[in-house]
Image (tube, rainbow, N blue to C red; front, side, top):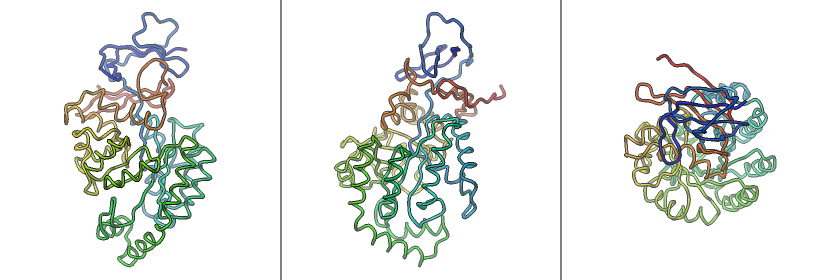
Amino acid sequence: MKTYLTHACLVTANTVVDDASVLIEDGHIVAINPESTKNVESISLNGQYLLPGLVDLHCDAIEKEIEPRPHAFFPTEFAIAQIDRQNASVGITTPFHAISFAHEEFGVRNNEKAAQIVRSLHDYQPQALVNNRVHCRYEITDPTGLPILLNLLQEDAIHLISLMDHTPGQGQFKDMQAYHNYLSRTYNKSAAEVSALAIKKIDQGADALERVKTLISQALSLGVQIASHDDDTPDRIASMQALGVHLSEFPINLETAQAAQKAGLQTIFGAPNLLRGQSQSGSIKAIDAIKHQVGDILCGDYSPASLLAAAFRIPELVGWSLPDAIALVTYNPAQAVNLSDRGEITPGKRADLIAVRCSHGFPQVTTTWVEGRIVYQCHYPI
């Protein structure tokens, strides 16, 4: 059966088309405004926006589903089912769950638990609502994580890798005080515990470059893209580019974001940063990166629901067109990781679509389709 979506406010790559229609068959978009249709299931969207399904390259919200409070763990399969439904409800049809490999650090952020989550996500996919993918975050000061990640790559369980270095004195933690403040506030660590962790990181960082080269070589040979994380200087960007990195997550300042763009690295900024109007760690505001044309992609970071809302805010904040803003959460991230079959509404692409209405100044998803199949639907009061 063909599905025929009518009376849509269609957001394409270049424009917004009022009262448009889209024909879907066998999980793909067949035509836009077809001249004739037969044997179709017709669904009127009554003027709602019709957008491509969102592609979220980095969101670690799954961690809170698994460990909502320190040392209080839910069963992994239960947590995956909840985040799967949450993503469907906010229009994210291709989420990349950010799973941290940081041995003996905190909660779910240790290698044994992280590997379990990755494999559980892979096993859950046949019954999932959305196209769940895995973004492995490797803490490069940890020598024990590398063999685990190499095994997961061979299992075809990883779809994106980012390189993290949370050693104090660079990146997110500009000095020891920032490192201490974060660990004491988030994980209730004492000053002595923070100091011991910092010393260990510094010691284990000596051989990090060789581990990074090994991981990047194996990943790229399998078609898995690499992102750097919290880049803080143009020199850091140059080093990452030389290693084969293609994405820069959360560059710390404007100068570094500009260097990334000049070097051909696409930049990723957090939607919560844009929606809140600030970075939680004092880095560049996402909206400033957008204003200076150095923000290529928005991600959910720690809040899946913020992704669509942030994209809809951009036109009013900086005067962009809605299609250009929506590309930051659809087409651009899909292209960055070589998912050329999605991210825009055009014939031949996957029918990953969302219907959206605006209520009280914010967009709300009413229907989500994944490969033409409705996976979420909500009837809001008129």
